[in-house]
Image 1 (cartoon, rainbow, N blue to C red):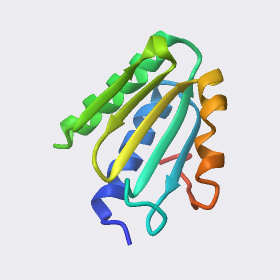
Image 2: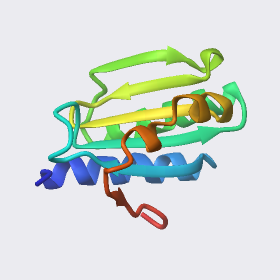
Image 3: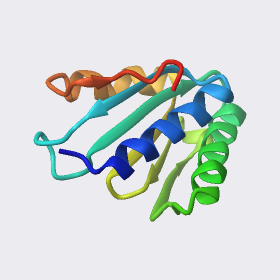
Length: 118
C-alpha cells in the first residue's frame, strides 16, 4: 500500500499539470507491480514550451510542499521530460513521443488513479 504522502504528492502534481492545460493526465498505480515507483504521472503537452511550463509548475507546487525532485531528465525539445520524486515519477510528453513509448500500454496491468478534479 502506498504511503499517503506519495498519493498526496502525485495528486498535487496532477493538479499542477491540469492547471497548465496538460492533456491526457493519467496516474498509474504501480504498487505491487514495480519497484521503480508507487505512481507514474503521465501527461501530454501540445508544444515544447508547454512541456517546460508543466514540468516547472509541478516542481514549484511540490517544492512549496517540501518535496524536491531527485532528478530531472530529458528536454522539452526531445519530446519527453521526466521528474523523479522517488515514489512518484512524472512523465511529460509531446503527443507523438507519448504514443511511441506507450507507457500506459506497457504498464497496462496497473490500476489508474482518478485525478480529474484532484
